[in-house]
Length: 66
Image 1 (cartoon, rainbow, N blue to C red):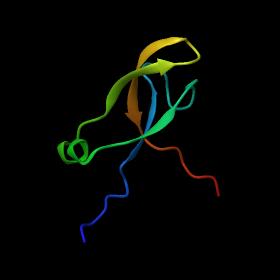
Image 2: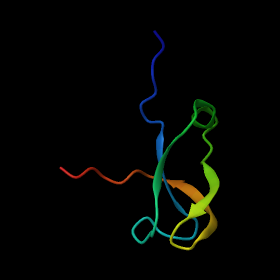
Image 3: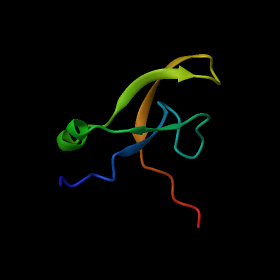
């Protein structure tokens, strides 16, 4: 059986906002081709707070609360 990559989820926040002060975010699964190439994911999605499409960039996942 093939080994599954468990680190394939990325945290997406709007471009230009910091990880601490973002207004909207989502988690997106990253494909194996992006993982192999080492590229950061960047996509244009709808931001409900601004009511327009903006660029979202990949950042580190937030820490777990214990």
